[in-house]
Image 1 (cartoon, rainbow, N blue to C red):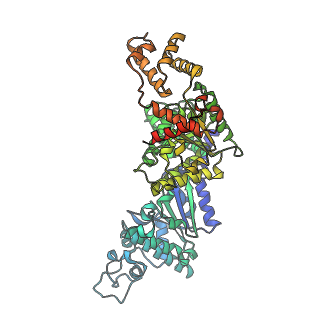
Image 2 (image 1 turned 180 degrees about the horizontal axis):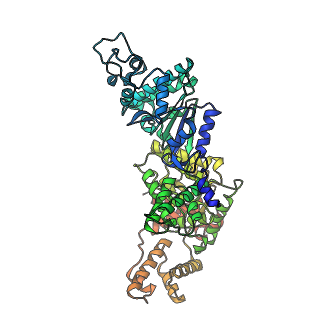
Length: 616
């Protein structure tokens, strides 16, 4: 059997979260688990080469030791296996047709009482001979389960009764397994917030859960409860604070799991007549590597699309799908980038380029790594482009954060859970924040919203985490480094300025930029162009090149100087760019990178005037 065939027929790697879950139950005595992360994905089966949902995978490992029960917001309480339901009902004295006391009168109909608490529900479960004969009789077990649909309070009370009765049956010597309850979409049951700020229904549900899970009888019964949610922050924090609680992150599939899944998935196409096997832009192995950060369902969709269309799966398609998923989850706040340009594609700026390159080199070693650095300079000078290039050369995946102070985005905890998740799967990342002074609020300002303060606290916490040194480097680009929060600046010891080039460097930069776009300039024309564009930023230069390319569609021999006679970049922000350059010079931690034009006796006065102008 070939290596590939062997990989297709043997079970995939055991997910890390399953090892943690089993260890928590068997060796750590945990009874309450919150599983968050990639919970909607597929996972390798325990004993075979196939893949299953999260709940199916949990049942594979725990159904031999526990009675597996499900709690769903719309479906109520249910069982994964009918045999386990029958065994539990028999052990606690129920039958499929009636409960003990069925046919005897009860206090009132179950439908009106289940939400009121354990004591009254217990009367329905066990019967109440003292109730008036005119009242309805206790329901059958199936009716009882049916009536928990879309009634989460009732479902929780019933679950507590089931676990208590199971423990009592075990104490009587009945051969009965403890109960494992899996709560789907647990954040909808137990949303975050202080007791006083929760709605009455949410508060009652949370109180019922905490009372149940904190009961010594629950602990003594050996029961476990598994709460499933997309993010840890979706669950009420009181659950995490319970002594027997454990939070487990369900991470993205690792390299070995992706490789096993892709090989097995491709093998299935040989038996299908409706499509051919998927193909890849480079190789299957490259696809497995590029797909880091995607769940197996998403990977499957890419393979299916390739098989149906006959088109190869490209790196661009992988990245597009990844960012589409991120946009739907986080409103476009997070973007994953794999820059295709590197230092070899940059022109000029030898000093800043060397400084940025050294930062990324030093960040390979925790002994020399820093958590953050700042790149400052005027608008359009190329800060982000330079940082992306060196991040790509270092082999890091780029995570770009944008609009993180948007009024439409309040899930700051969710954002950082997601960032940590990608750090886990990618290993080493560069987190880019453009216009960082505007993106971040100050935790010291009374004008900063509580949500923004929590955002900054999370960022500062990540920057201070020694365990993330060399794994994560924060790259903060800004035109106003003086407005960054002091707690951020104190964690960014290297502040690298980038200025507009001057003299011969500027001329050579212009020549290289035009040549890179297949526009050759003679010495005379180059001198004229440089002289006519003294206020141009690098971004303005790019716009000029585009204008030239456009003009040459109609007249191929159009000169750059001819274009400048009909179009020119605006001078509207020239004074603001000059002020931004002054501020970059004042905050630079690299004196040699500051041009001589800023080293004047009037610099401090010029700087103060610049700040006043920019504050208007």
